[in-house]
Length: 215
Image 1 (tube, rainbow, N blue to C red):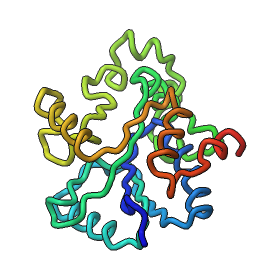
Image 2: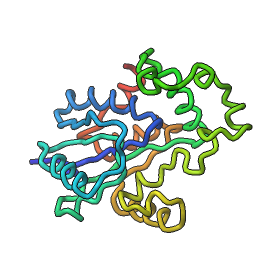
Image 3: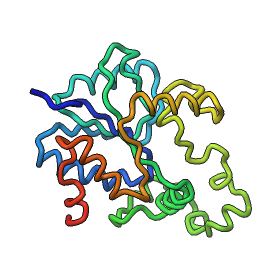
């Protein structure tokens, strides 16, 4: 007998602690025996109609119970005849998120990788070491784009209007959160978020808080 829900999607927002959560999910999937479905695609969040259909088909045919995770804007499974999964996500203070991305693009992350050199090979040294205050005060495009780090599409979806900041996108995002998301947590309160996930989805997240505190 499959637990309920047996189809969960974590369409993770970038620079919101998702690397930590995915590491926890790898441990939990082995511990609890659910199917953790990941993706090698990390930088394509907007999909064509055919790409949406193909991805939804691939997710829907995964062995259940599954938890699928990828950086991707909200997908409406029912639009393409699929069973709508339960969604979860985590967001964070926008200033902290901006800071995290600014330095990640330049110097990688805590793993000490050099992949930031691959990610931004054309970045000049003076740009890589540019003081963030100068970037902001002098209105460099990287620090002044009005759509900078726009997260609404992760909840609004794949419709082109979701990428246009405004009331329509916001209202659709709120509707989707109310109808499709079991939980949208805040990174600054991660321990509380993990505790709620453990309570709401025990067959996926049982013991997650203790694992997080005692890796």
